[in-house]
Image (cartoon, rainbow, N blue to C red; front, side, top):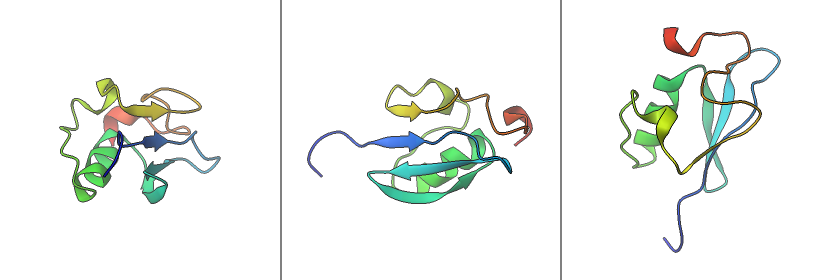
Length: 76
């Protein structure tokens, strides 16, 4: 793959959760940091759930890693 991997966590939806994309492909709707880590693992990107919030190459849009549309990211 040429260039850096592009990971986008979209703004929280009105019903809760955030869409996760890697290189333009939607991986799923995450409801917490553990979900984001699992989607990345399935895409071949190993990231410990405890480290997901600090990874520099994740673009958190519409709020940081603690924003989940009414859900507490630490309980997911």
